[in-house]
Length: 172
Image 1 (spheres, rainbow, N blue to C red):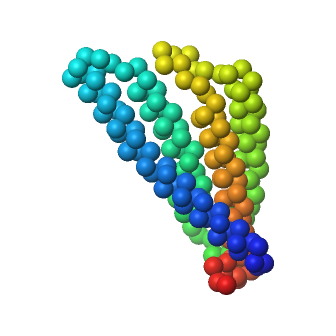
Image 2: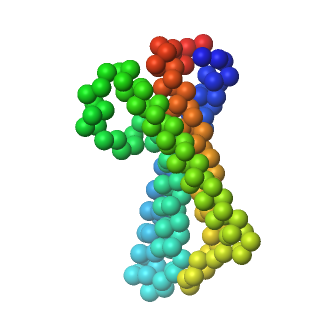
Image 3: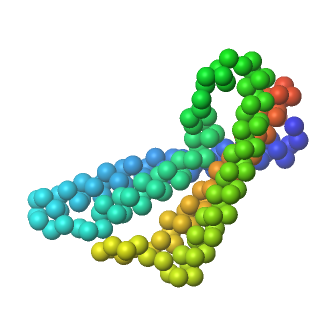
């Protein structure tokens, strides 16, 4: 495989790892905020209305940010009924086809996410609640993470094509 593709795969995989590590740290943020909520609500009788909603946004960010590293590490859900019975090359061909379908699906999702982000920016969209947070940051993160997932899906596609050809992308 060309050097450019090898570099692309290496860079996208590394970025996915870093974003995945950042996503993992969000679990601790959620725990801290929910603990703060429990203490202020029960111990000092002063409920903080933003805590649960902030945690919901953080959980959404966690899911968005974890998508690319989940693809990279092959930790996504797969129906192994037929897949597990295929030869190694057969699996790679199925993975090539599903990678193409995934890229198409994520591209449609990205179009919708960009449309939603543009609407949020144009209308200064806010969530209707006591806290009333802006929707722009979470929608921006959604668009960025969908772009990263598409980049990772292309990385997977290149890896599967290389495997069918009998090429190791990690060799120099």
